[in-house]
Amino acid sequence: MVALSLVDQGPVSEETPPSQALRHTVDLARLADEIGLTRYWLAEHHGVRNMAVAAPEVVIGHIADRTTRLRVGSGGIMLPNHAPLHVAEQFRTLEALHPGRIDLGVGRSTGTGDDATRDALLRTPDGLERFGEHPARAGGSGFPAEHVERGRRAGRLRRAADVPRAVRVVRP
Image 1 (tube, rainbow, N blue to C red):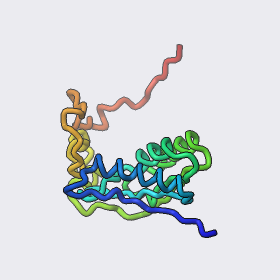
Image 2: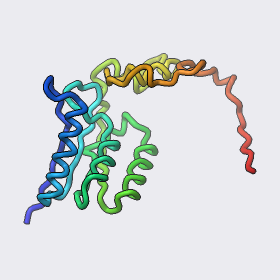
Image 3: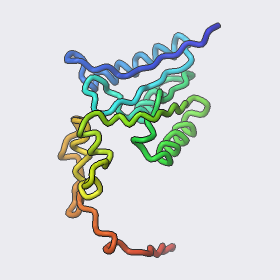
Image 4: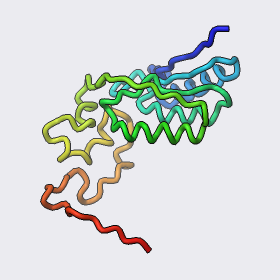
């Protein structure tokens, strides 16, 4: 028997906003699990208004929680957009929560076709100085600005001379 799998991009339209597209993704994954498909992969897209999956690792965990045997993974995580250590830790944690069911696919596309995504990846000369501005702006994400904790110093990186050279860990 041939093993069959699905790749989902979480399509968004005027009739299907991102929240509904993600619910459809979960429903499709449940159906794939029920009918015996092997894998369900989620494609990562940034700054694209007609696709809902910008954080496949989050959706992978959500789907794995709602299915029983289906392998769930990324098709793929674009490593130039992420710290590889963080990606490895995320998928190691997902694998610990869902043993034998998590796949990590990686790619090398930069995915920086739009200014907001490029800025959010700190790929501008002043990117580090402005890093606190990015969460609410990135990719026109729809993330409410009032949910971003800015604090008094957010968005301003102190000069290297202001950062302590040594940190003392105090253990009780």
